[in-house]
Amino acid sequence: MSVINDVVSEVMDMIDGLGCFAKITRGALGTSAGLCCEVAPSVVENVFLSKESYISLDLTINGKHTSLQTLSDTLNNIVDYLSTLMEYPEGHGFQIVDITRGAPPIPTIIGREEKEWIMAASVFIKVYRKEDES
Image (cartoon, rainbow, N blue to C red):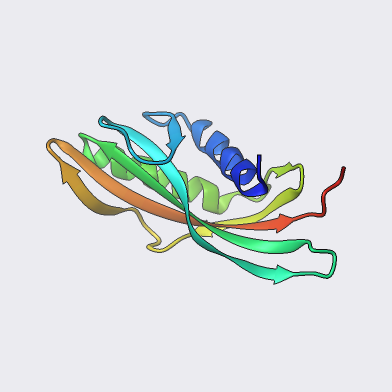
């Protein structure tokens, strides 16, 4: 996998560890209650002579549920948890350096389908992309 996909996979594992109402998936929301995430347009902040770099990933987290309270609480818990961590995972070719609240800083209602609410949240993930160690 690519470094970006590895980072997203690590963050998804952290979210799943919270025991939310649904396992988070990558891509679009399904037809029923669930959670999903995808990388939004992001930026390479610094590139060094070694070709190592700092990347700021904007990860959008969407959710759908019949209970607005459950959905809001879940997305708030995810963003609160990720943005207050002090230690982050490291993998082959990367180290997550920081995770902060995205824009908007709190989950926002983005729609409604029949009896289900749809909300979005966002976190910024700062990643140090290391030189390939192999």
